[in-house]
Image (tube, rainbow, N blue to C red; front, side, top):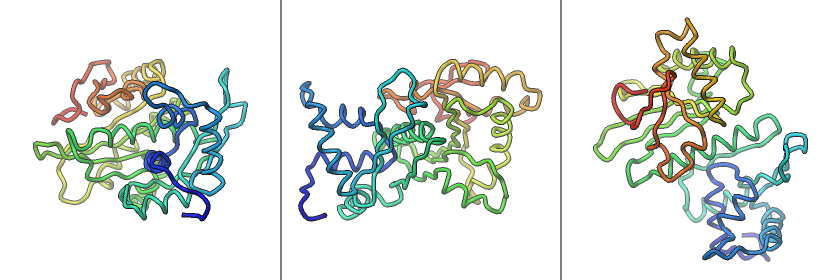
Length: 273
């Protein structure tokens, strides 16, 4: 720890939260600076955040004003070098789970959505399942170098249920910026990548999850899949949801939807996804 800065339990809790990826200032303020219904003055939170940034425990990125429509501009925080070192030193988060995220204008909102999903995946542990493996875009890029594919899924994770069964899922995060033809090509590519992304000898079910930023965008993508002649054979391999649809306490155990709108109550079931 850098001399002159005493880290509180609340600071450490924030570091653990940011280990999985970025969070908005308001999220940190509400999550860690509200106690028993009494909100700490925002200036107190900002003063502490400024101190943690100064000592390189946290970094903060402010998106261009042009990207912030009708909303107050706020910073997006990520765990910096000293913060990573601190949680590694205290063994608070397994080293493999700490994501080294770099933010830029093109990827910022996509990365925030991905991180929200990752937190929800881990929220279910260990009550209903254990996360046995998780690889994000950068990890998967290393796995499929030999396949020479340019399009790579955003995430792949494997869970073991309490009954001992395993399930793996490939995830595409859609922030609404991808044109429809490119999106369809992505889905086709991901299906061809399944063998390269599945360890040899593993026969666990593999689902394809598409997480959208709005219900309207989800409906648009579902319609495109249903109307595509190319997707006829594989259209039922995809399950859709919105990031808001999985943000509650149920996480992955919320209902998901096929391309034709059919509701799937449980994704951890053979033959589904």
